[in-house]
Amino acid sequence: MSVLLHVPSLLIAAAVAGGCVSASHLLIWRAGRNEAAVLLWGTAYGVATLAMTMVGLRGQIPAFLSIVVGNALLLLAFGLVWLGYRRFIGKSGRGDRLFTLLGAIAWFAFAGAPQLFSDINLRVQVVSAVQFAYLLAIAFDLFAHSRKEPLPAFLLTVAVIGVQEVLLVTRIIYLQLFPIDPAFDTLPTGLPIGLTLIGSTAFIVFFGLLQLALVGQRSERRFRVAAETDGLTGLANRRRFMNDVLTRLAACPGRGALVLFDLDHFKRINDSHGHLMGDRALVEFAGILANVASGQAIAARVGGEEFALFFPDADAATASDLAEGVRRLTGAFRLRTPSGALRVTVSGGVAGVADIGSDYESLHSAADTALYAAKREGRDRVVMHRRHLPPLQLAAVASF
Image (tube, one colour):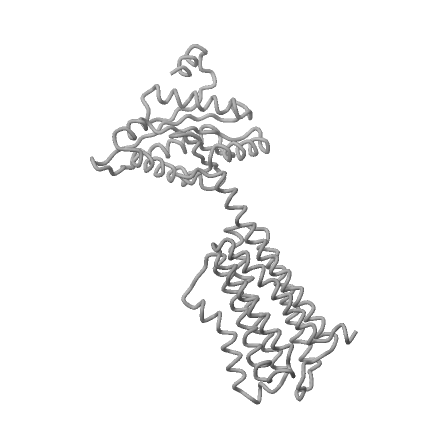
């Protein structure tokens, strides 16, 4: 057992693991070079590899290099890991660089107090406490950010950090209860120290894998969002809208209301003021629609100047009132053009699931019929589908 838990060997093994993780991160960064966090993490593992090698060579190299410089590099590595996560979640602050270096600076300050620094127990506890502080800061940032960007690896990373935090606290408490002889001038040995080093090696490998998983999950999520989002307005596209609405209708087949919108005289805007001005009109209207759709509603651009809004918990009357609010906000907006302010208007058609049923094609057809009725009646209005519209009138409206 003493051979298996030989501390210098375990440190060298941890250094090898860190070197492999560092190489993988740097290779991935070099292939893409679009994620600064991966470069920071790769650099951190490289620094940690050097640090653990120096600590593992205690007795073979000067004590100043092994104890002072080696542990300072180890704490710098933790600071770089923390900075990498900050960059990954898009956070930055004036004090980030200082906090990255703070652990190493604190260690050098501690090394300047010989009476304290001479105690190996205190040295191990200080290193463990600084590591604990960096990991706690990482966990706090990741947990807060996971609500904005729900990547599965975020919470798993927090859980792994929690396990490592327990190991660090255990190490600190163990040295309080069973201190090493302060006069000890070589690396300490024993079952507890060996097991914590094995745990740290596993942490290095698993932590590195989780970082790569985060990068992969973010890329996959970005591709998925791009495939489901209208590039001009940022709203959902037709494909995503259909999937979301069909899911809601299947879950609650008797509830919901659909509103279809169409910007009035949009071709005239493009012909008279240019396509760039037409795009601006679409973007401005999409912003109005997105504000109304906050919450459970689903907003989408489903065609050129055609938009849709589905309210899963509203009836036709409520949806009609909300659509009327969209119409008023749109009419109050003025699009600035070289020839002056341009008023943009919109027409809407509303159909409720309670009246039409949960079949989407029927629901869409009813809302579309109501939309064309709004166009036929003069535009700049919202019309709710009339369930008992006479067949001849319905045919006339549908053929408009």
